Image 1 (spheres, helix red, strand yellow):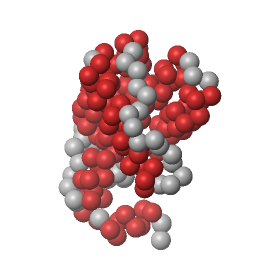
Image 2 (cartoon, one colour):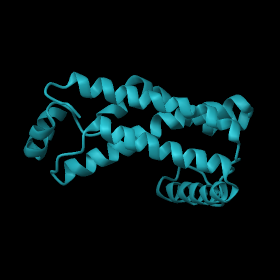
Image 3 (cartoon, one colour):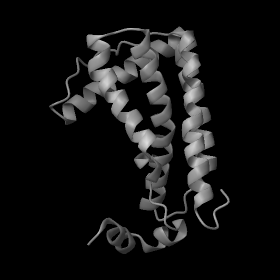
Image 4 (tube, one colour):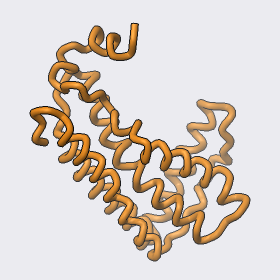
Length: 176
């Protein structure tokens, strides 16, 4: 049985409402996959071996491509699991991109937000390390630096917005 057949058997109502689109489908777009791979390689190897302004900006750009797509994907998967119609994907992506942009900018320019994010990221990494033994984490605050020059990376939010526009317009009858 293929993945398509399994989805049709598990949630025929949700699938019929969604047309051909699958939950979190944009996560498989090549630019998103490449950004995720770049983010993981950069954060887990390059920053440690060759830390520079370039590795910092590369993480910011890759993260800003991936984060809104993941956020929308989580909403779509939740809607699919609850057999609900998800909100329009482009509208959801606009909301996610704006939210991610605001949080990112706040972390970059407000030291208390930077400190809070560092603690949350550090403890989240510790939790992941506890669930997956091959991931290492000290469990303390992550090394996060507030840097207003990182705001230049906000342009990367245009990538998921463009992806959602292309995805939405290619679906018959979808005017989201």
